[in-house]
View 1 (cartoon, rainbow, N blue to C red):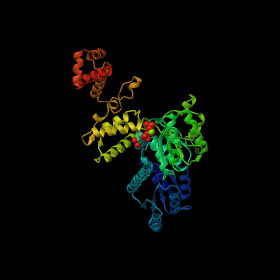
View 2: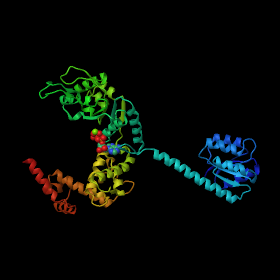
View 3: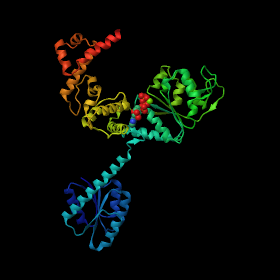
View 4: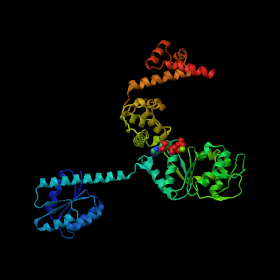
Length: 470
Ligand SMILES: Nc1ncnc2c1ncn2[C@@H]1O[C@H](COP(=O)(O)OP(=O)(O)OP(=O)(O)O)[C@@H](O)[C@H]1O
Ligand SMILES: [Mg+2]
């Protein structure tokens, strides 16, 4: 059903068109001149305007001109009579979509309207498509077209333009480092260095000399002056990863740098001015750490001027397919082989899983599957057990029953197999004890182990246990 606006000064014509097109299932508004038509268009938007050329007050051509400005997507059909053939040419130039000659055949008119409405659908579809295309699926190497990632891109572009300190927060593997690099490479500092430091990877003293450098003789082994990473990143960006792991003493020193934009090398007295943009990241809840006295409040406020939160993958599952394709392409490039396909079943498993390790875990999963898969298309057997066995509803004590159905036999055998393995692990491969744990006889346990071809594991588990004892 479409919304039609009919403009004709002849009453019988209006009544006829109203009747015909209402019967076709459309909503019809009929007016007697261009001025009234414009008024109606201001109140609501119409899909199609059918207008006579010759009308008193505001005529059809004038109406068309205003309509094109006010509602560029609306379809317009002009009704012309032999006497108005020249106006018809003008109307064509002004962008009328179709014409119908008076007197007309009703069936022909219906057809013209139907065609116009089809064209309108297409026009609207294209507009939607265009908008969809403009929504970006990536920002550099960052993949994902979910609304959450769109917001991240927006934020990255905004903060890239200025020099303020940014704090990127997000679970492990959500792409914090990737985003930090994107901020740098979109910023005016892009031609200078991007230096990444994992604050959790150093002892306190080492971190200090890494960041600030040292002077000759500052400590044993300091045989010459050395620049720190802050100086190395001069004019560029320093990425302080895992800032939550910094000791309270180092936090004080960092705070000073942030306040004064100067550093002092370890053992030195000279204050060196630095122009380095700081981007920090953490997977920890800094606010909580502040409350617990593990992170300085003043430093927290300094670094979190602009917080940028990366959503966990489970909250933007819409990105999983794009990311999977991205990694398939990536590993194909690395191995110089054609990119593998991914079965629909595999994709569904990937979408079902909750990804505690986020994008990194997905990347590793794809890498492993690509390496294991010999055929052109990755099959579900190439996925790790934890993903195949994952059931989102199990945690609530509910039944595991995904929307796309469940391969019951396969699911039950996987479940059985994991119980067998767990029992063996807990008993260090002792079959008698494992059978007791599983409330079954040793005979049936062996039968099951053979079924899954995992009986040899009992021997291996015993050996490992023996080694640990010995
Ligand atoms: N949106 C994304 N698009 C493409 N690749 C991504 C995306 N997010 C993360 N990755 C990839 O996942 C891996 C982990 O990302 P990254 O190292 O940036 O995460 P992180 O948040 O710093 O994790 P951690 O806290 O464990 O250090 C990298 O190989 C990165 O390229
Ligand atoms: Mg990281």
